[in-house]
Image 1 (cartoon, rainbow over the protein chains, first blue to last red):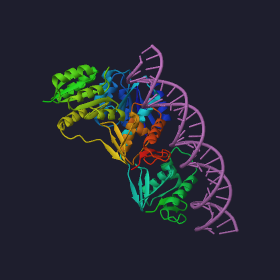
Image 2: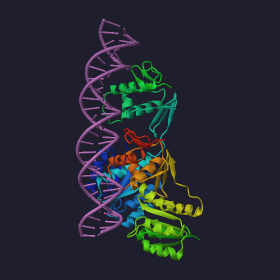
Image 3: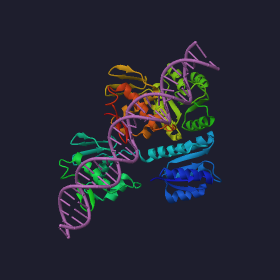
Image 4: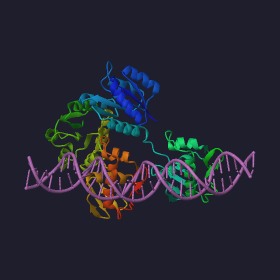
Length: 224
Length: 224
DNA sequence: AACGAGGTTAAGACAACGTTAATTCAACAA
DNA sequence: TTGTTGAATTAACGTTGTCTTAACCTCGTT
């Protein structure tokens, strides 16, 4: 999950944001000054920064400038009231967004999500073509020899993962981790059921699978 | 050398842009309101305008409309976190480009240059034609098999966005970001309702949509 | 044959979606 | 001002599809 660095000298604010962001599933780091912020930044290389404009000694704007020198890490500014001067300065330094205090925590979370999506998630998703299958995540479409097939979300995700790594065997645990996510607690046998449904759809004879193969005692693999 | 007119009610922003543009070698004029902007426009006949959408009293959009009545002067809109709806409204009125705050000054300069270069040249027609629909944002008109249909602003923006990217699936979150704009905090389910209304209008049988398809667990897409 | 691993099936829990209606808000007219 | 209209948003409710689990079955190995 993404790492977020919060830089603000007011402990209560840091704490509030920290709690919220953790609950949203991010790893959170924090610093109370620009100097400390820079140190932590270098150490943890966060995916996004939330930065108070008003900081003691060196301002958040300066920190932003320093960071922008050698990184494109997205930055969201936090500013006490809408000082236009701050805003303009923020624009010029390449802030990705700004939030005005007092702010709504959900609003901040929404902006974090949006900025992270723009920063990381805008790369074109890759179409996988293998064994007559064509899997296009952007269109969420799967075709076999030209014919479109309907898949449920989990089926789609599982097949996409396996087909992207043809020939490689994955244990149920690994599949759960990679396809379901590391925070899911489902029985490994759940995988079996989804494999079965996939076979039902893409195998000529589901009883003798050619594409989705079982490796006894180990797991499953997409033939390749 | 080209003359540029900036219309924005925030002095710091005007000043920032002004400095940059002078440095780029343009003659710069400015105004703080739509009325003043109109006056200055008539006087100096600028080669390009940079126009804030949010202006006191009469909006930038109205000013744009007024100016477009008797001139083809290129206009670049400046908008706090532009939404697709704003953008459509802007295109509707013949804006030449669009810059979203917070923006990068160099980026703005680059766009100014680009717009001036093709000032007389081609403007890509933004009309989308797909599946019997014809969507023309410049006229804010939509026809299905030749028959005109009325759409609300949000409906229009949403349909335009989806139809412009046929086949691609968009999550509710992304649609909110791209169509509503990143500064809106509406529930993702709001998208559902607009989709429903659109289906009501453009689908033969709204219960079995052929154009606006649901991709369960993911989002919506325009068939294609 | 006994065991373990995987296959298969069906039922219940749950989440996602569709739909409607109430509410809020802005624009506009009287 | 007041009333009217239309758009947008949200909550509530009903419906449907998906996921998960557990029980049982089959097959291969020892």
